[in-house]
Amino acid sequence: MSVIETTPNVRAMESLKHVGYSNEAAIADLVDNSMDAGADRVHIQIGADKIAIVDNGSGMDRFTLEEAIKLGSNTQRSSGDLGKFGMGLVTASLSLGRKLTVHTEDEGSLKAYTVKQDLNLMIDKNKYYADLDESVKIGKSGTSVVIQNLDNLKYKHETLVNRVREELSRIFRHYIKAGKIISVNGEKLTALDPLMLDEEGAELYSDDTYDVNGKIIRIRVAFLPKFSKEEQKRRNVNSRTQGFYLVRNSREIVTASTLGMFTRDWWNTRIRIEVMFSDDLDAEFGIDFTKSKLTLKNSVRNLIHEATRKQISHLINRTKSTAKLDDKEAIVKHSESEQTIRQKNKLLILPKGNKEMRETAGGAARKKTKAEGKSKDRLNVSKTHEGNKDHPARGIEILEGHHSQFGPIFYCYMVGQKTIVEWNYDHPFYERMLLRFREEKDVITALDYLAYSFGVAEMTVQTEESQDVFGNYHSVASSNLRTLLS
Image 1 (spheres, rainbow, N blue to C red):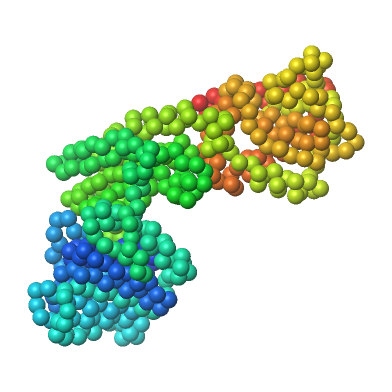
Image 2 (tube, rainbow, N blue to C red; image 1 turned 135 degrees about the vertical axis):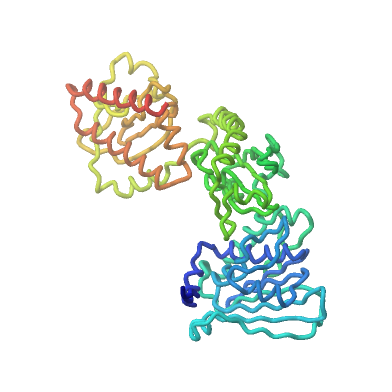
């Protein structure tokens, strides 16, 4: 039997630059090493041509440094460490730049070490190696990591600095609350709690612990305060930030995930859940080496689902019960749809102003009787909708109205020369689509265009004889859609 050489080509390290790290996650992974070294101060400097992370931790001896610079190091780890596979230093730095310099001063010796690793030189020589210098320790213990030849940054400098500040403030919030100091470009970070428990009006709905194979999972369910639209935007409270925040050894590893347990809807926006566990449960949570992705075992997923299902359901019902039509936070904005329709007015086929063609109920237009003309109708439009039938309608207004869950999906009618599209706030379609995606402008405008186009088409082609046909058609469509969505 012969033995063959299986050392990978150095060029394979190029692929490690794209292993799934975001720039912020890579820097967070390097901060993990500082926390594991017992540092209580970590300073991050992001420049145009280099990124430096400097800490006052215990430093590394020569053996530990030599192992750390390897891909998949064999350094000894303790329970509670943030590191996992010994790949963070190499993979995180590679994902940012091509040249790495590590200087460390070990608290247990009088020596200091500096190691340099350059991907370009390794590729030229097709050899994994690093240059190591030994010197006399001149200061207190600590480590500095400097990454140069930055070739994989995703943002402009100012944007990257702000994103790193925000991400690290949240990821390391429990460390910051415990007294650790982390600064980015001279600015000391304050803990950013996604549960917002320090905010007036926030509610810690439940805080419970659960046993998994003799190990503890802590689950906290929080209900955020009710903010104004402006405050929601400023505080980044939206569908993308709702959900589960998973925290391993007091360090956040997963942000705002649904864990496949619910869909992102407007009524979930104020619900945040923090799941805390130790590295003893890494196998059950399926942590990958970037510590930003996981694959839950079914037993853990089922436990979390059962532990939070009733709380989430109750908080959703509380949110829905307070979402009234006159609540500005629950009304969908249609101004962009209206503006586009006005801008393209001359290109559209428009209905004629006609006193006989009064409205469509998700479709069919009907005549206005004399009796109806004497009283306010159920759409709160009391005046006769008369227009010049030789001139097309020019205005547009899109709004909402209460017409019961058994009413049509929307109404389309004319007031003088203005076309009105009125969504039925009570139909399940409104809740499922418009309220659910009210922050997604592309979705809302598409739905508005659809209702407008169908409504205008019906008013354009309808005759007195076809009114009943259109009415029955849309009555069936509305009923079926209501049944399917309920």
